[in-house]
Image (tube, rainbow, N blue to C red; front, side, top):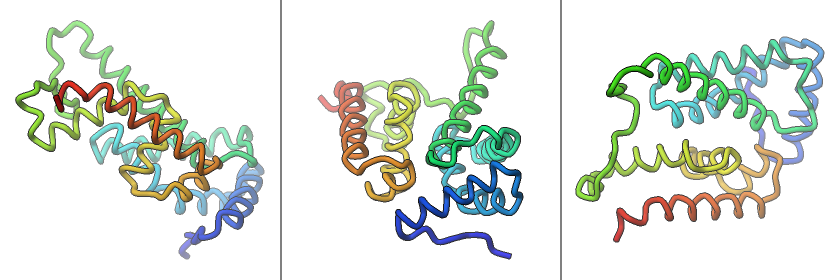
Length: 194
């Protein structure tokens, strides 16, 4: 049985999501499965962008939903489910990076293929390297709210209205956060474009 629901209208989506969250809070497995099927791909994309490893992103995404189920009594149905799930997945990504840093703490050089390599102005012409630099900046210098909105906008190609609906924000807030993100990124990348 396909549990995907097409969320087309923001108001309908909000009310339906709220109903599903109340049901989830009361341990309704069907509501959980519906939320899982509707949000798995978005959370997976979000985590993949942060981690740069699809297999690990799949594990973290599954752990995200496992934590949601285990802490279902704490869910606030009036809040955005995507924002809640993104927060949990961000914490899991941070845990992963902390674990990696502890493991390699005493090593002179961290050899981890998924970490973006340091950039020089001569190397910046390569588009893949520029993407790595941007990815690194998104994950290290942008505030979490900006990160979430930037990833939804620039990576998942969501419209400002879709982002506002997903996160339960106004379109103006989304626009301001995108502007803020781009301003921060330009500041950190200006040396590469001079």
